Length: 134
Image (cartoon, rainbow, N blue to C red; front, side, top):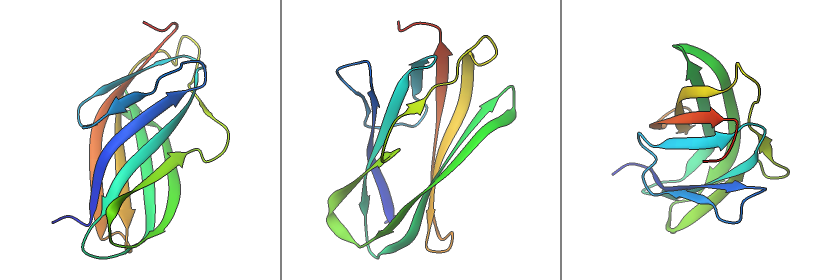
């Protein structure tokens, strides 16, 4: 059994009432309006042993090139049957890029590492930036 299990990902928007919820993020598409403000909540379990220095690394690729890579330290988590929740950013909001060059489709991946890189969990997905909500 894996040490880390991602249960769901929730995306909250400052200008929308309800979040988007992904039970299985793998190969899903997240649509963002350019310049929208958003937060991401990760809901996960830690199994079998504690995880030290759990980090979230999110990478975005356009036309095969890595255009952005963000690393956020979540901290230490003990083994538990209950779920943990971490929201990124903890304060304030992320802002989606804007402009003609920013619009379009991106490949993305979320990686979780910890225990000196021994815990490794990766989820591919895609992001589309549009000039208006659908």
